[in-house]
Image (cartoon, helix red, strand yellow):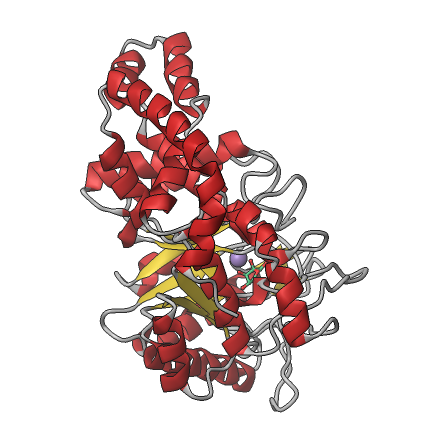
Length: 427
Ligand code: PSV
Ligand code: MN
C-alpha cells in the first residue's frame, strides 16, 4: 500500500484555513520573542526518527497479545509500513532492524524498496537474548559474558554477521543490548562477567568498519532480576571508554530505575561526547515501552533541553546521534502509536529550541531559582503544534497524520491486503 501526495493533500485541504490561522499566531509570537519560525522549521525537518522493525506489530505482554490484523508479514511489508508513516509525517525517514527477526536476504532489493520510499537504514541491532532454532549453544546463562568461550564465540560471530547485513543496507551503526546477567546472588562473578563482556565487545569492535559507531545500551533489570552486566550508563560508559572512539552509549528512556534523572545523564554523556543515540519510549513503572511523551512529557522536554545545549556547546547537529523509537503496543494500533511518538519527540525538540538560553544562563549565574523555572516552563507551555504541522506541510506531509491515517483507512486496507490474522515477527 502506498499513500500518494494527492491523497494527503486532500486530507489537508479542509484543515488548511484553521491551520494557517494557528500558524500565523504562533509565528507572530515567536517573532516577537526574537525567534525565526523558518529556522525552527528547518531544524525540525532535519530530525528524522528511525522506526524499529520490531514495533510495527502488536507487542503484547507475557500475559497475552491482541493482534490488530494487517500486521506486516515480512521485511518488505515492514518497510512498506514505515513508508506509510513517513509519507504522513515526513519525520520517520529511517528504519532500524533487529537481526535475526528481520534478515535482509536480498539486501539490494530491500535497500531499493527503502530508497524508493525515502527511507534509510539506521542502527542494526543484534539479538543474543533469545535462542534461535538452528544455533548450537544456548544463551540461557548469557552471551558475550558467558562462562563458556564457545558461547561467547557464537555471540561474537552473530554480532559480526549483523554488521555485515548492516553494511549491505548502508547502515553505519551497530546497537548492542545484552540481557546477560544473573537471577540470584552468587550465581556469577560480577568481575568475570564484565571482563568477558569487554573482551567479546573488543572483538566485535575490531570488526567494526571505520565509519561505523557501536552503541552500547544499558538496562538495570529484566530479563535478569538480580544483576545485569551492563546495568547502567556508568557501566556502558566504562565499556565504551575501554573500547575506543567509535563506541558510544545508547540511552533507552525505559532503562532506568524509578525517578532517575535521565536529563542529567544525557547532559553528562553529551559533555563527554559519549552519547550515541536514543531509544525513545515512555514509562510509569519499569521498561513499559509506552508511547513517547504519554506519561512524562516534561521529562522528555528536559532531555531535549540538555540535547540542544549539548549540540550548541559542541557545534553539532541532530545528525550526530541515532534517534530511534523502541516501544511496544498492546492496546493501540502500532502505526497510530508510532505517529504519536514521533510527534511527541518533535514537539519536545521544538520547545527546547525556543528556550531563552541566554536569560537562563544569566538567571543560573545569579542563582535566581524562580526565574530559571519560569524560563523553562515558558518554553514547555508554548503550544507549538502548528509549527510542527507547518514543518510537515512544507515537506509534503499531513497536517494531522493521525487523522489522515484514519480518514484514508490505512489499517482497514492493510487488513484487506494482508488478512485479519497477519502477525509481525518481533517480541
Ligand atoms: C531491551 O529491553 C530493548 O530495549 C533493547 O533495545 C532490545 O533491542 C529491544 O528492547 C527489543 O525490543
Ligand atoms: Mn531499547
